[in-house]
Image (cartoon, rainbow, N blue to C red):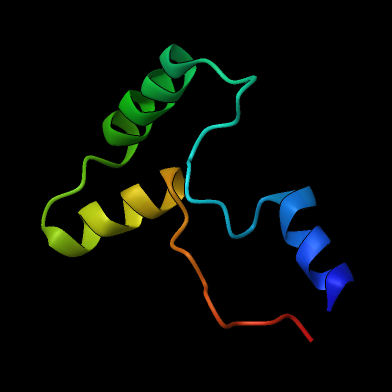
Length: 65
């Protein structure tokens, strides 16, 4: 069980924050703007999909087997 817990810390799959300490907010905003320009979402489903590219939804309880 301890190994599983360390893996989450090592790769950040269960992280609550979107950005790492070494990343710049300006780069994130630039990526966000570029994605919205490229995909121009219309409607809530398309909006959700573009946001999922930026901030992948948490997959709590799902394990890769």
